[in-house]
Image (cartoon, rainbow, N blue to C red):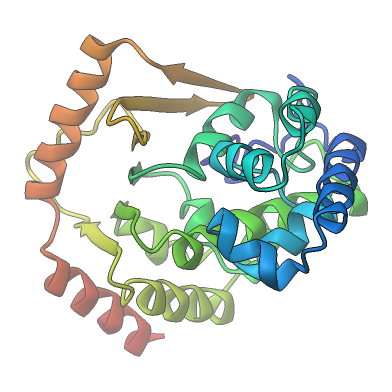
Length: 285
């Protein structure tokens, strides 16, 4: 279970987890498009002015991507939108494929300076392949229908763009070795997952460490955690159970989580040794 229930990026049913309508996102996108055209700007001209890529601008205008706060503010200024974009953004409460308890965290991810993740249940959503994710979706109980599965994979794929669209964000992952030894979905899916994680780990802004199967001391017995640094250098935390998630802003509790994560970084294999172990597991399949 990670990133918002059951490895499903907050997309499980119940507790507000049903995939919801994206009408509000589409409406916001139409407002952005109208003001952009009023300013006689193409997407190619507009994108650098708001410091986002052309594909990202296109996704926002099409209602497929939740607009980050800095995009809204820059677009408001660039397009001289009379407060219309800020007003429309206040009604963006829905994100298809994300459960209600995870949306706040998912929004913060798009603006984070640093994002740390420890996971012991399934490979985190940001690192999953489509085949691995769909295996989790297909085995979920109660069963998802086809539309729910598609909405959840779309949300997962959208979040994974963060690696390349946020090259200045530092991503750190500590993963338990048994997540790969379990071979969820079979050998072929596990092989593809290992290839994918190894590829992502080559990015300059991504660090992947493996917590070995045998470890006499471990600072993470209380379960998975995520930590995030905001643009104003505040640290926040997120922990998740079945059908629920806990957003943590209390600085004392966040400090405890930081202490535990720092200790686990020292207990896990080094970056080079972690990649070596993943390559060894890949070769053994």
